Amino acid sequence: MHKRDFLRLSALGTSLALGASLIGTRIAMAANAEGWPAQSFAASSVDQVLQDLFQMRTLTESDRVHVLVAKEVDDALSVPVSVSVNHPMTDDDYIARIYVLVDHNPTPLASIFHCSPANGKAACYQRVKVLHDSPLRVIAQSNRGDIFAAKPEWVHVVKGKGAAE
Amino acid sequence: MSVLGTLGSRLTRRLGEVQIGLPENAKRGEIIEIRALILHPSQSEDKTLFIEEVAFALDGKTFCHFDLSSMSSANPYLAVPLRAEKSGMISAHWRNSQGQTGSGQKFLRIAE
Image 1 (cartoon, rainbow over the protein chains, first blue to last red):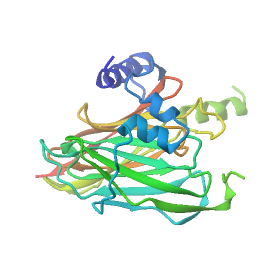
Image 2: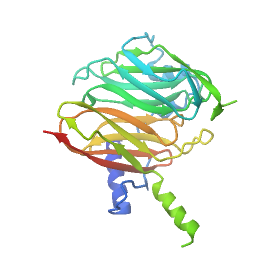
Image 3: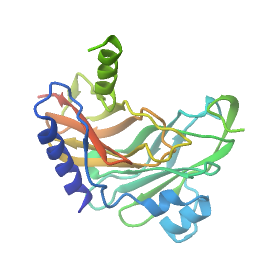
C-alpha cells in the first residue's frame, strides 16, 4: 500500500472506528505503512546509514544548509533542532528530503523530513534525543538528487536528564 | 466508576492528542509556520513504541511528512512551513510503531 493511501485510509478507518468524536484526536489500529525506511532506521552506525541512503557518495559540505542547535544541552531527551535550506522550491527544482542524524545515538538516523514545493521553503523544526556527546548532522537532498550537507554541529550533553552514562 | 478509573479514562483520551498552532492573520502567498504537538510517549529503552510517521495535509492533501525513529523526542513537537494560498483545514496525522494512528485539525483562514 502506498504511504499516501495509508494515510487516507488510516484517517478514514479511524473515523469509522470511533465515530464522530468531539475530541480532535482518534486512535485506532492500522496496518504498518510501507515506505517507512526500516533499514535506514535500523542502522547502528552513521556509515551504515549513509551507505543505505546515499551509497556512500561523497557528501560535500554546503553553506546553504543552516542548522540551529544548542552546543550544550541539559535535557538529552528533547533537543530542539531547527533547519532551513537556502534552495528554490519550484515544481522542477526543490528540496525533497532533509535528514537529521546524531552520530553517537544507538539509532543515528533521527528523522527524515519529506517536503514539497507547496511548503514554499525548505525548513523544519523538531526535537530529538542526543544521548551522548555527539556530532549532529543535517543533510538535504533535492528532487534532482543533489546532496547538500551541513557542517556537523557538536552537541555536548550535560550529565542530567536522560543522558546516557 | 471510581475516581482512579475516571482519571485513567481522561488520561487515555489525552494520549495521542494533536494540538495544532496556526497564525491568526495569514496573508495569501505568505509562507507561514504550522506547528503540531503530539502527546505520545517515546522511551529510549523501548524501541517498540514511538511515533514513526507524521503527515501534514491541507484539505486532505498531504504536502509534507516526517519519518521518525525512536530517537525523536517524546511528545513530538514539529513545525513546518506552508505557502498560504487558500483557506482550508490543516490536519496532522500520526502513526506509531504499533500501528496506532491519530490526528488533529484546525482551520486555516487566509485574509483575502
